Length: 142
Image 1: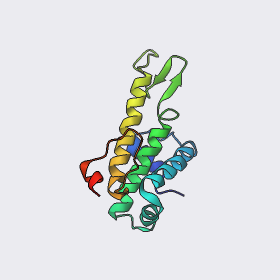
Image 2: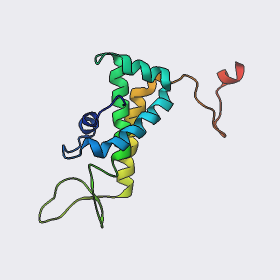
Image 3: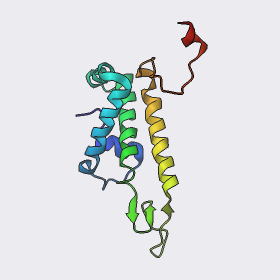
Image 4: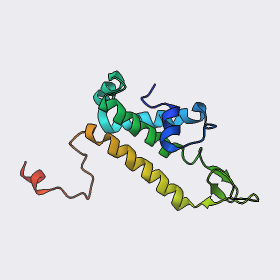
């Protein structure tokens, strides 16, 4: 069981109550695994053990919920029709406003950014070095 619940995802993502926990479970599981990779098992366990009002729990619940939302957005909360994705609700006479793939990616990116910002205080200070990434002068002097 993770930190965030289906209700957290619905609340943070402003999803319709018809989006059931059963639909969100795969995305919550993926979010839990990713968040653990960001903050480490020790910090994740500390959040699980923390009280509901403690910052680490509040922050990591938020991070996990936004990650789950970013994974779920293509499957729930927006309807998919042959013409593309549409937001909930009709504009009138059966007309819908459709979201293009770029708009869906922006929503996913926004949710991941929110998750990362919430988790940032608990992430390791050492970031992995990727090929082509320049190091700072401080890194070279250590």
